[in-house]
Every structure is written in C-alpha cells, then in structure tokens.
Length: 68
Image (tube, rainbow, N blue to C red):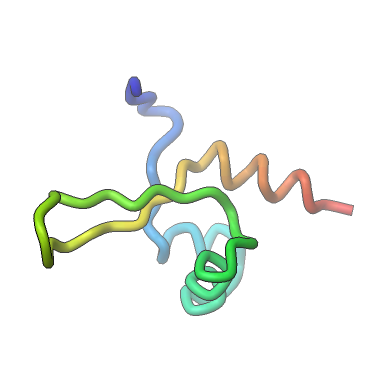
C-alpha cells in the first residue's frame, strides 16, 4: 500500500467530527458493520494496543453513497 499525503488516515475522533456525530455513534456503527470502511492497525502481539483509522477518501465515498 502506498501512502498518499493528500488522502490521510483519520482517527475515530477526526472522522466523527467530519461526519458531525459522536465518537460513540461511529464506534457503534463500526461494531454493527454499517459505518464507513475502517482499518485496525496493531503493533502485533497479544495484548498490544490497536488503533482504528479511516481513510478520508473512503469516508467521503461512503457518505456520497448515502446522500439523497
């Protein structure tokens, strides 16, 4: 995967702000499988911390698909 500096990875907080909703709503949608595409990034190993990230372009595309 190449890194495109014009298409950053966003945190849950940044994505929630972008969509105008709470972080909890976005987390619930993620758990229910109905939110925007996301990536779980981990350092590996048991018990290691993991991070959820969203690619800006994918969130925008997901939002466009749901616009009326």
